[in-house]
Image (tube, rainbow, N blue to C red; front, side, top):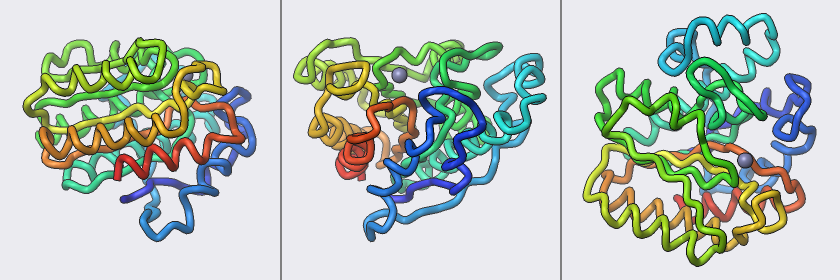
Length: 253
Ligand SMILES: [Zn+2]
């Protein structure tokens, strides 16, 4: 499986928040790099045209003066685009990126998010007519309100933010929804590991992240010709973040 990552994501001075803290990307990459089952590929930054697929010019112009933040957010969006491109060719991919994006709406953003990475990636494929439909699972502890806002006009795009408050019900909720989808052009996952039992979400165990990855793998195999990709959203309990991301990726690949 391809892992999309750039050393630039180790820089933590682009912002001052939970997603930008020093050591966070190191916690993930220490588990993902140097494994023969993963192939590391480097992203290109998203262009203004890419970002405009999801955001208003007014919003883009409001981010631009903060060059460091803009450049990091453009590289994050570019990483998501690359993951989606690889997935559209039938190979799974995970983009290890920051800042996250699921709270970024068309004309604003909140929390630690800047650009709607998932929406930009899917809209880029849609614009190129590589897909007409999509399914998005967002298992972050927080609802991906930004992704929902940006993609709200796209009727063939279904987004699931599971709400069940224990892991068994959570997995069943996902299974019940995807079980009713006979076919879709691509599966995108907003992978937020703050739903971890020791993180703010206080819900899922490490083994559950493996099971979610495996469930999305089987769903994409059955319904989406293996086309699946995931991108990093939240996840702030650094001691276990790496093993949780690894568990998900091992289920997903
Ligand atoms: Zn979150």
